Length: 187
View 1 (cartoon, rainbow, N blue to C red):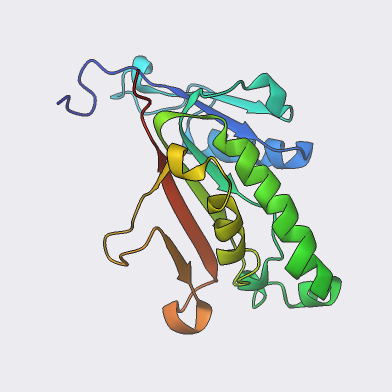
View 2 (cartoon, one colour):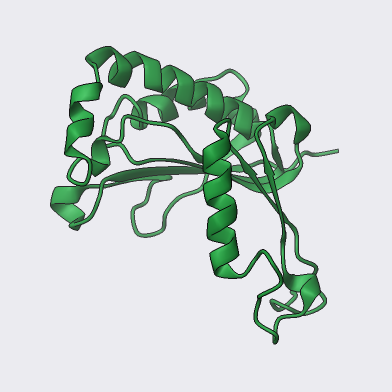
């Protein structure tokens, strides 16, 4: 095994969003961390600093290129209503039960194609809706090719590969996380 930092090369982080302003926000956040603009800690060798690439064109990324993919899916934001109480008036039942889940499944399915064999896929929302969370997971896992390609990547403390973080239980905003590992191909 190789220890962190020992003869390792930094990879590339690809941030994708179809909304240009969100990509600008990501770039601003990266600048504050020092990952942009050369203001990183002097004691970290430059070959350990990941390259950052932002794109609004997912077709430019390619297939099976990523060791890990995080899908931070657009959602109803029902888990953060205490910080955005006015948001509840913009939502309809159809948005929560059909529109968002359909879009989320499409994004998750497309994003899964980016994961290399042996790589990891994480799906996250800031919703507490079962339609957007467990419902999307169930639809993703019911695809014909799912069992041959993916394994559940369990959280050790939960005994499941997905978990809900709930405001009334955990004392914070509500979130949902599901995760899988892509099977290695046998040649």
